[in-house]
Length: 282
Image 1 (cartoon, rainbow, N blue to C red):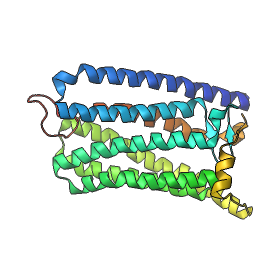
Image 2: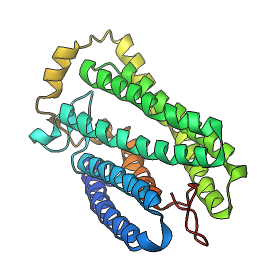
Image 3: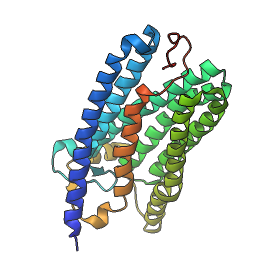
Image 4: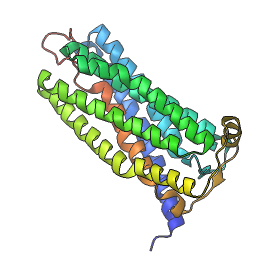
């Protein structure tokens, strides 16, 4: 039987290996985009693709950082005793990365909505970034106060954003050609899987932790107290019982979500003005 401490080590090593591979994949993505610049893109389209590429770089880098140094924020648990593992720094990295990822989605959605005259899609695109700014605020509140309700709110907002994306893909479907529909089908499957996971695993996990703290009469930190506490050294633990609930979302987050981000600069787009005879690329 596998020792549970060994299981955490293996999981950490696997995350770190995937992070290195993801960085390499982003490099290949950038090289591929550069090679296709002259033959597939107008100048405006290529600039937009570059935006998507660099937003992806920030997300890939942020997820790699968090894969190398996993943390459980509210419990102040980590796997490596280093100043880089403190919760305030980790949350800062996560905030930048997540805003970049949702900016990728919003940019793609906005261009698709404008090119197909889908008002719902355009409105959804404009709503994504403000909603995630609120979600990031809720996450910071949770990390600083140690109140799990912040994570309940944060992940509920992310789930709502996924539902907005899914609805937008449905609106785009009849306005799309075959390559675009292949992309939409893949993203619909991803969005549905994400929504199912969030509503059955992730949000209920944080809801149960919040209720357990309420039942135990837990007291919460002020924002000032929380910032000081989150800036201190974390507690190193390889106890599987501590990590087991967080392993599923971290694993999916630092693998599948990163792969989507890397792929977005290359998907068939809906932008007008592509060279004649070429696929319309955003």
